[in-house]
Length: 592
Ligand SMILES: *[C@@H]1O[C@H](CO)[C@@H](O)[C@H](O)[C@H]1NC(C)=O
Ligand SMILES: *[C@@H]1O[C@H](CO)[C@@H](O)[C@H](O)[C@H]1NC(C)=O
Image 1 (cartoon, protein in one colour):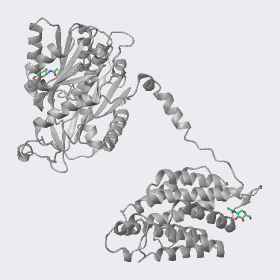
Image 2 (cartoon, protein in one colour):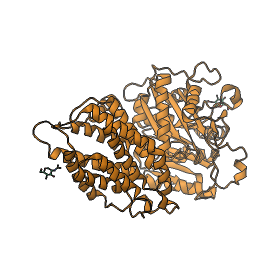
Image 3 (tube, protein in one colour):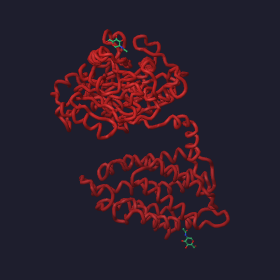
Image 4 (cartoon, helix red, strand yellow):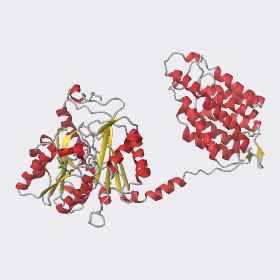
């Protein structure tokens, strides 16, 4: 748990965060003394023609709820201090002064004692003054089972935003208060969520030891931790697949009498929401989302009709995520007002980040097919002939030699670079080997080379990946430019000329010259010797000597320049060494 923050005064933090919301959405305003964000009366959906929708709760869950105020979503949101409910008076003011009341007001809150009490009291006060107000409570959390939950009941977590969005879409379309309340209840009833966190969060302004007494171990994850650091159901040492498996079974396993709150079968339409609790990198959330989608498909035969992934309801910078599943249920309101259409309907709220329209979702299957078909690149056949079996054997020997050399390359690169050169080469070699096993036999060198280029471009990244890709593309170009008009076998001479051309092309994209301590120190002598001597054996030996000669060379290019570590004088350039091993492997393979 990190306790470093940019804003440490919790009052100042909440105030300034609320004040920021109108900066990013001109249709909303902020009543800062009551911590209310509301639609400006001039905004179209603040008009008397629609039911007003209000939500709120403690701060720390942004973008919930203030940033969900906007046309198509909330009419007003009331915030408390961090993790504490707003007061009944703040809520009453929001209902009575900040939203239009003519068609009625629906208040949606999550099932926390403080929120239910204060929002409930605010609603009662507004009703007492003669207003039409209804309240819906969402308890979607399956993190704590019936036995443990006891009187506390189910809390509300991120699935709540799906209820808000569906209700907001319906209200914007002019539905009655009764209709909006019923659909909100229907959505809440068909919803189940569960969270997991790697760590508690630090609340700005609190002493560190106040929150960290029960901190999780480095290897532990807590299943079911709430959005206010509340304890979950269990702590586990597990990997992501194991964690997701547990979470999904808590939501979906109907034989688990303690937790199964909702029966979802593979014939149901399901909406999946994977929510970032605030501190997970978007990169990791992507990996998590993919794991959830795959397990749903493989283990539960559920293929969600909508998948939303992003930051919708946080627990400050919580290092965790939650999974919510909504069983799509008939609203009974006819076309244009199904749960999915209401979920997809546009909403102009800065916190609502689900951008995909109904039309696009409907086209999903077609798009998947198109994407597959554009992947096939056409290659013009050529007249340069190879013996496929021989080329495959020679290349296999060479690539295996690169794989064997990986630990050395990695060791050198750990000293002079960032340590990933060996793994990158190995990944490329393995990918080509696996392509060789699967690819169709061809006696056309350029078709064969093109297959290799495609694998290299996908499997290898970084600078060396780019250099190999440019070099091989230029080689293909060089081979093609002089191919004869009738089928001819490829000769050492043809290779040598084409290699010269590609060496030249390479020099247009990298300034590296022999002596700069790069893979050029192996490539250059190889090409030159092959041109002169015409035999690959001596060319490969020249490459190897070139690579060995990089020991003691000072780098003037590449990452090595910035690495100030010790010991670089004693090791060769890892890229040059890797290439030399490949070339020695080719010569070795040809001798077999
Ligand atoms: C909310 O919690 C209470 C107990 O505090 C429980 O009785 C009730 O069923 C819960 N409501 C929902 C909608 O989950
Ligand atoms: C193409 O052929 C010409 C003439 O034989 C030769 O000078 C040139 O180097 C060749 N280029 C390649 C790429 O083989």
